[in-house]
Structure formats: structure tokens, C-alpha cells
Image (cartoon, rainbow, N blue to C red; front, side, top):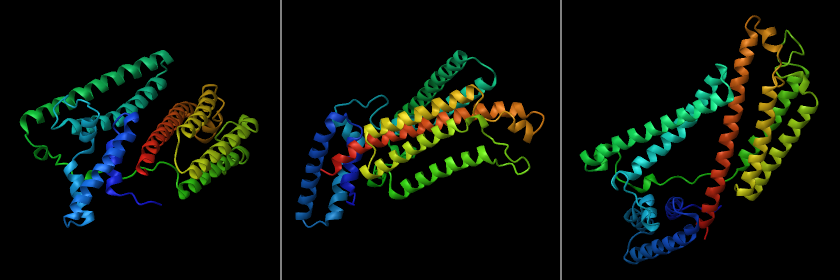
Length: 324
């Protein structure tokens, strides 16, 4: 496996934020420029490793360099704090908005709201939260811009090589592949055990999932698990996620989510007799609440997995430039 150098990491951090059609040219131009500058320093008697660090440090923040190359304005707040604000805002939006949407959707579903009311509440709340996040972060950084002359005085510090992002995983390692395959086998095995034997010692045969899932829906689960296992092995053999493999993963997730949500909505996924039998009074209410949480949890996990694979596929395209 080729070692990833500081130069590789710097180029990767720079090209990730420019339009894809410009990445190859920027990567080649930047690599050539860096190599020439390192060579000049080495000829002057500098150590190669120290020369590389000095050249990359002099180039500065990769995001700023990419903005200059792409002729992209970066003055919403001011060049001094723009990238610190932008990184923080993206992080807050990525964390707060999905959590808010999930919380509102679960609350509306449990309160008996219709689908239209649920969607309206989620959209309205997300818009309100996004606007507030944008407003307050801009306000804080605008105050920094006008009252704190140096980013280091605000606790951000100057950009250094230590801030270069570590290389992201673009595929599945051997250990990850084996772990995923074991997880699939265990998942199918647990469902089979539940449908045939059950996990309640005092009530043998009392399954958590609806007994009506056997055998047709269980066979469908096995087929889906085999397809997921095949996809996992293909990703490992290819060495990275590609757009086509990400689309295949999207299709598998969509089939699984659509089937699961439909079964939940029809009351055919969880065993209606399980909770009343185990808990007694109030078991039906617990089953209803758990069905809602279970459904949203499946959708959230599948959505996260889908987005993650597309991000890995995108990073994989950028990573191919590093080998040139």
C-alpha cells in the first residue's frame, strides 16, 4: 500500500472543495509547484522532510488556496474568520437538523398527527432551526471580525499542518468486510431463532416478530442479506466505493426500508401478542410506541448508511487524483 505523504494530504484537502471538473488540473499543477519548491529548498541544503513541511506551511490553509484558485468569493463575514465560521456552521447543521427532524417526527407520530401534519411540522421546524443557526453563528463571527483582530485571540489559532485532515476510508478493509458479513449472518440467525424458538424462556415459541413473516418474508430477508454480503465483498475487491456501488447500496436500503415500514404500518412486523404477554396491562401501548421508534430508527440508519457511501464514493474519485 502506497504511503500517503503530507503533500498527498494537502492536495486532497485542497481539491475536495473545488468543482470536480477543475480537480485534476489543480492537483497536477499544485503537485508540480510543491515538488519544485521542495527541490529548490533541498538543493539549498534543507532536509527533504523539513523542506516539505516548510513549503506546505507557506502555502497556508488548503480551503483558502482552493477558494483563490476557483475564484470563489469568501467574504460573507470577512476573510479572517470566514472558513472557521463555515466549518462550524456545516458541523452544526449536520448534527442538529437530523436530530431535530427525527425528534419532531417521532413526537408527531406518537401524538397521532396525520402524514401531512407530520411533514409540515418537520419542514417548519427545520427551517426555523436552520435560520437560527445561521443567524446566531453569523452574529458571533461578525462580532469577532470587528472586535478580535487575530483568530488566535478568539481561540481558533493559526492554520498549521497539524490541521490537515487524516485520509478518509474510501472502501471496506478486510476486517470491516469480515465484520459486516458476521453481522449479517448473526442478524439473519437471530431473526430465525426468534421466529422458530423465541427468546422468552417461560413462553417458548413467543416471538418478538410477527409469526406471519415465516417463511416468505424470512426468505426475502435472506435474499436481501445475501445481496448485501455480495455488495460488501465487491467493495472490498474494488478497493473503494464507486458511484455505481453507492447506487446499488441505495437500492438495497430502499427495498429494506420500504418493506419494513410497510409491514409496520400494516401491523405485520412485530408480534401484537408479545408485549401484552410479557408486560401485561399497557403492553399494547408499549408495542405502538416501540413500532414508531423502530420505524424511524430503521429509516435513520438506512439514510445515514446511504449518505455515507455516496460521500465515500465522492472521496474515492478525489483520492484517485493523489496517485497521479
